[in-house]
Length: 217
Image (tube, rainbow, N blue to C red; front, top):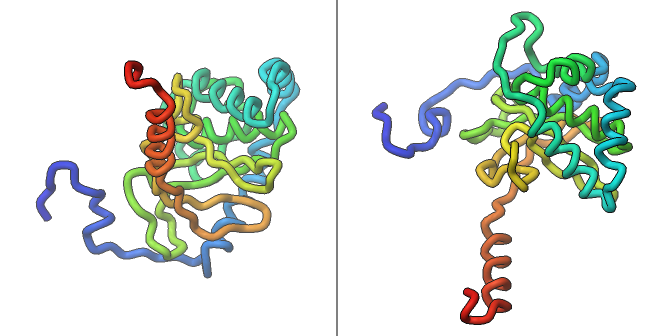
């Protein structure tokens, strides 16, 4: 096949073979949850608990706390893609290592944020995505990126990405819209699709435009 300018990922247009031993996505989700809980990837250390208390002491709302912790991890953990050989895989590196090293890849940033959110009293878990390409509905390994999900008080899960939002106001990059993801949660989950943010942006811009005087538009 010939490459084209701004084309979609090869996986989205070329023939491919997907193999899996998982019966469905829920089984894959439960496996991802258990493999990290069994390893105690997200157990916060006393030092992390102390840092979390310092960061959220002036937070006024649930979202304030989530935002403060997300941006601390985004801004203070340097992205460094150094392979650990057999230390790599779907088991996320533990809290002690991540807080000591302050560097790593997406799964290290996601793991650090999960541990800090748990230290603040939140229910937080890992999730896997495929940045730049779709995931076909076959429970095979089709992932290249790790993120965080936090369960809000209303029972809804919110996606957070400390890898793609350093020094930004976003908690989830606008470049990651309509992206498939799989959460590793205790009840198991099906494959999901992040919604498009474009309609919300258009609605907000329309409201803002009506409220501003003509001179300020």
